[in-house]
Amino acid sequence: MPSIIRFATQQDAEQILEIYAPFCSDSPVSFEIQAPTLDEMQQRIAKILQKLPWLVCEHGGEVLGYVYAAPHRDRSAYQWAVDVSVYIHESARCLGIGRALYTSLFKILVLQGYYSAYAGVTIPNKGSEKLHTLMGFEPIGIYRGVGYKCGAWHDVLWFELSLQPRVPNPKPPMNIDALRDTLELECALASGVPFLKIGVR
Image 1 (cartoon, helix red, strand yellow):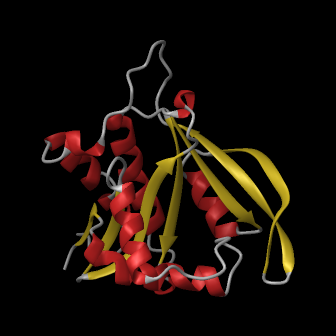
Image 2 (spheres, one colour; image 1 turned 90 degrees about the vertical axis):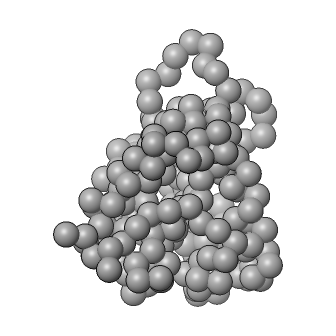
């Protein structure tokens, strides 16, 4: 059965929460200490999808990973920049899922008219650092001792990715709904699939 990359729905919240919850309770990867409830996760997905992409990688009806973009800051001049996050199920690491999801996400963000993506990584995290470097991110600075969790202070390394060349007087980014049911969006979603190492022949 082939793997696919598609938009998340609120019905995916339970499987997304299964992936995310361990990062809250047992790891400094996420600075959330308590996992959100199912209702809270459904609300998060719905809120992001009002404007930006939230994607999942699905294989055989199972969500193996997800990625989403969120506004970088609230001020108007920041509107062309996003923060991005990707999470992979512990049983599905090293299968190209992170690269595949990011590839599709970035294609969509370019279609929408975004120019910069930022990602914060609690360090050390060799897997995440390697993925972001592979995707073309460049490290731009460290927030030292910015978070306390699991009995220790943690640094966060910030990465930056230029999504497309900057131009004068850019148009405001397009809402994700404006791309629904377009060939361009379908192609963007499919662009990450070749990087998956499962169910693709």
